[in-house]
Length: 269
Ligand SMILES: Nc1ncnc2c1ncn2[C@@H]1O[C@H](COP(=O)(O)OP(=O)(O)OP(=O)(O)O)[C@@H](O)[C@H]1O
Ligand SMILES: [Mg+2]
Image (cartoon, rainbow, N blue to C red; front, top):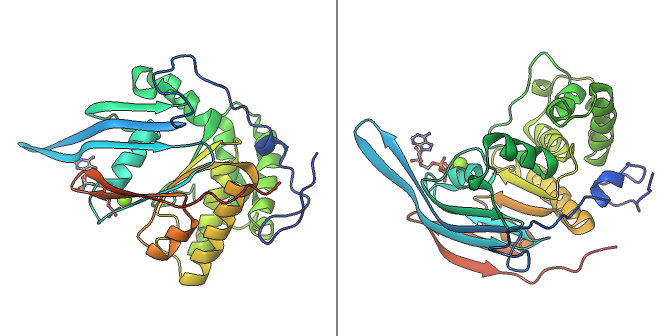
């Protein structure tokens, strides 16, 4: 077990071994190398058929995210941000184009391969948190362990550690719906961390929070990014949050209209 220095929002005794020892394996099919980006979206298009209409939502999206980047995706409501996140997460197929994660085109693989890819390295915080109502906060956080190949009691232990990490231990036995929006998002973050991700995708995690809770959650995500070098791709509508980002991708009319790069803050050891 490894101890970490106390920082606001991060517990000193948390067992962070898994997060610190994630396996940064390189892929063999190297169309895009990690040097170019651990996440490379290339000319992605997405159409939805609604009745007789073929609606184009994404029209040739391209972006590159490097290991340790804190990337933000912004744009007007309905422009396709959630759709793009689902495509990068391997849940929704693009109509055209490729998504290379660590050099591998995830859409050239099977559904089971993508499920494995998600379990082994990617945490997701959805726009609408989903909870199993009959389970406690602790059990809800442990749910990914079932598909991730851990025994449930191991999952519960890990869930307790992750709740400690996000400062929510004292709420373990409550039901998720008893918590405030900000508290629920911290719990959603704990759940996203359960299987030691190297990459977290978050769909507007602060969208329904008051200002203070939003800042607290952003600080926590930034600490995870700094301390464990977890790569972040996050949607936001709040320009105040751009200061956290190393890259801001602005979407318009189904494409990335602008990329703003900030200097990467030095990694704290
Ligand atoms: N499964 C679907 N079938 C048909 N249309 C869809 C589907 N999913 C998304 N859309 C449409 O695609 C467009 C983009 O939706 P998306 O949810 O990606 O937008 P968004 O940028 O995340 O918006 P918001 O900021 O409001 O969350 C919308 O017009 C939506 O209605
Ligand atoms: Mg959305």
